Length: 365
Image (cartoon, rainbow, N blue to C red; front, side, top):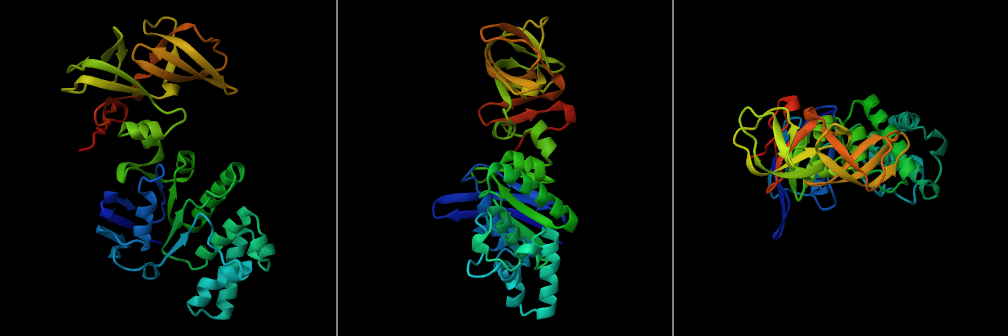
């Protein structure tokens, strides 16, 4: 398989900049997610990596070779599209074998590879059926088979499960990840679905307006978002933002919200003015002894847990608490925050100033 590295990759369409100087490395054998909302530049980035779009500037390396100006046919990669892109006049066997036949591979080896791939994907029984009569899930397996049969250096997938219904999409996501693990392939996968990215990915790049907002493993991106955008985009419900104004003094272990101290892990030297405290819903607890009070606006029952919406002096917040905790709209409750899982943001640019629990500064340039 292959390591893939992009350096300062940029794409302009006239006056519009779709991708702005992106850089990251995909290690050999990783399942790598390009995540972000529609129009963020993730598909354009993938297409430049695949050779379907030429970059305005920057570099793409596959196994150390600069391929940024090479066409897709010379990159030894396989592309899987959202809408499958199968040949409707061919049956399953011919669709899967087509790339090998185009390369001039012999009939015996082609037959062997198609049989092997069909066994891996569990589609032996439909090899002679026309693709026009297949279900969405079977069509997706055929599209994957056509990519796998070539044994390329890397697989590039653009929303490959987007056309499936929600229940089957989750099942296929599990199958796709298991297939990746069996093959040890390098896979680059575009999605707008944060749950899909967190479930499947070894590493995630989060993009917004053509910019890489954060790059890392799923847990770090969830626990320690580098920007407010990432904090809002990842998580359901997303991170809460409580605005306050003042200074976090050197040696201080708290910030003051509505006149009450809230513990934080450590000081941030020089942080002053208007700041935002970020806290995930699961890191807010109800506490009768806490002086920091909030009014319950609504409660959403979710089985063993519930999501309650709270009006605080520093903004609206949501907390994920046990369904055993009896709360009613209009009731006033005390709140405590888990000091090990708080982030302070600079509001103007939305950058995370620090997250002390993992001893990392997350501020970006």
